[in-house]
Image (cartoon, rainbow, N blue to C red; front, side, top):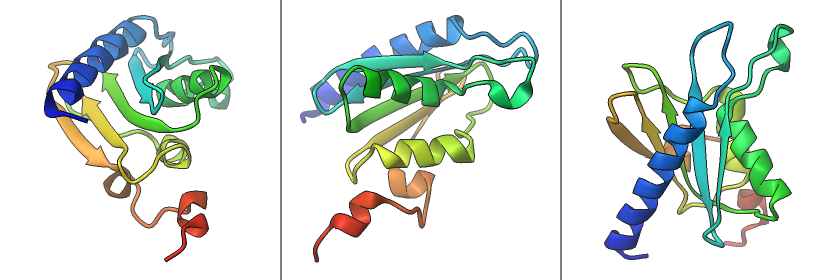
Length: 141
């Protein structure tokens, strides 16, 4: 993929992640998060965090976007963009890191943004070092 198309994809994902963040249901934490991902088939899916009074029953934005991807027929996450309303760049929770890993490959890029649109880019290995992955066990050396 060219640098220009990569930049264009990032802008589309960033804008969609912002939209998803605006739709978050976070009455308890008041901490909204949005996620947008691009599949290897060039489809975009999004998710937002959805809290629940029964705390562990909530859903993270990343998990929502991945669920939408699977329901939409996607299987490989090419790029994901996650934004929070924090002034600091935050990382996905451990469970979402593993979910991202489950549907990624070595080329997957993870963009993390704060409310000021500052961004850090990670590979899957940087996001979740020493992870367990079916992709790794199926590879032949």
